[in-house]
Length: 317
Ligand code: SF4
Image (cartoon, rainbow, N blue to C red; front, side, top):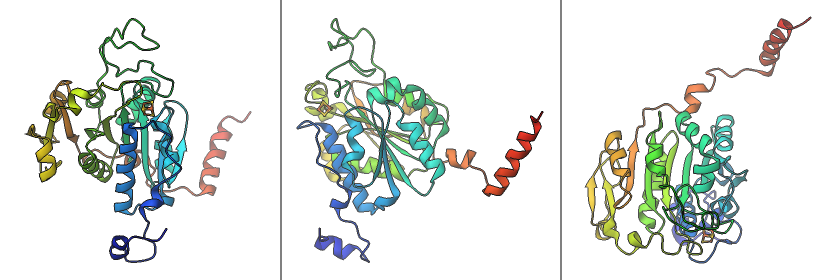
């Protein structure tokens, strides 16, 4: 497809990628699914940043959100249930020159992948993680997930969910070494876009919890916040997200929140009634996993072989 006039004017050479470059196969999510809004916003961001498709990887596990890599015109890895984070960490360790993103759902991340979730946060690889939290297992047709609301009847909880839901943002803020946490909703693309931008610019694991509508299995779950934006608390700061006139008109409940204040981030994220949106926490000083563990010198194959021979000789009989 030919570049648009705007693309022609803003691209200095013929390596300019059109928006279509970032669009993969035809989307098969349900009509009205919040995943579509997330996808379109990420595609728009990749296009604006002109991320090289051949140097960009989207990694997922299993679930509705895990279809994401198929719908991007970049590289992708649709992996095993709950295993997106170790795969993404491995890719980044081996190829630090790649842009690595993860799309995971509340079941994939907070249930079967919970161990990987906690340790990836602690290890802090330089990857951007999007949690698509629709509070239900959609792909397997309505089973309760760890973030499902108390009392929800589902195929696995016919008498209602008996436990309080897990709060992903609050949980991440309790992990040692966490470096970037944000929370946003799928139905506010401008806020989502700004959050994605900050998350991607962060060097370390940026965790973006996105409340995502599932109109097929939980059609009214987010209505209190969708119908009344005053129940969303917009976190603003000159080190976080600054309100544009459009955002300020929509999100009237605002508070100035310094993203370096971990204690306040925890207190804010604990409120499940007046949900905070924006940057909860950002600490750019925490070293990434690559900086911490990647060898400072690269070893040649000959040097590796020599080292192995020495170790093998220790056990020779
Ligand atoms: Fe989206 Fe729900 Fe349909 Fe899955 S089941 S594609 S989450 S609307």
